[in-house]
Image 1: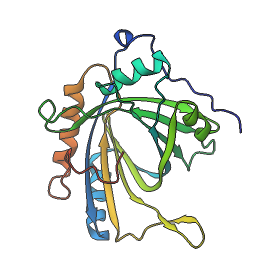
Image 2 (image 1 turned 30 degrees about the horizontal axis):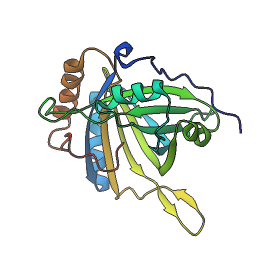
Image 3 (image 1 turned 90 degrees about the vertical axis):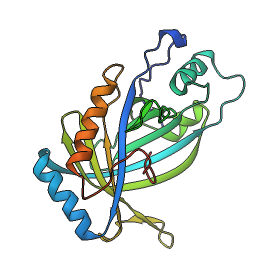
Length: 227
């Protein structure tokens, strides 16, 4: 398979990089009634209603040799703040005929003392097509896990809200099947990466948190099953 066409910015030095940050909040509910309450409120209080969500996500863990390129190491240090290489998240929209990938690098979240309300972490995104395994391997990443997420997505201002379940892997047929509606629903509210305006991003998330108050507790700690 051909290597993917991708445009990821790797700076010459860490001083040349203005690191973009994303902000996010997470929560979950279990049961069809609880899900329906969240769905109905978001449908009424967000823009343009909902659209269907069905994505495949693959997580790659960095295993860079000591002789890795200076450019990549500078980029990694700037992303994480401590020289550790960030996680590579590859996301494919299964409802898109092109089946293209969004490749994301996500660094370690800022400490709670700096951002007690929401997770704020370095993040960069790029669109790609082709052999994602080969691309990740070239950068020194190895495959770690794979999930399929199915549900709905909403938008309000700069915030994207995903409400989804994790597909269940059927070992006998080696296929992924839709989870029952009574299973856990995960709620993810996220702002796009930005180099400025982090307080505005957090304020926008607080608005979503307050909108769903009484139905689900969105916070920075409920990060199970999210990336």
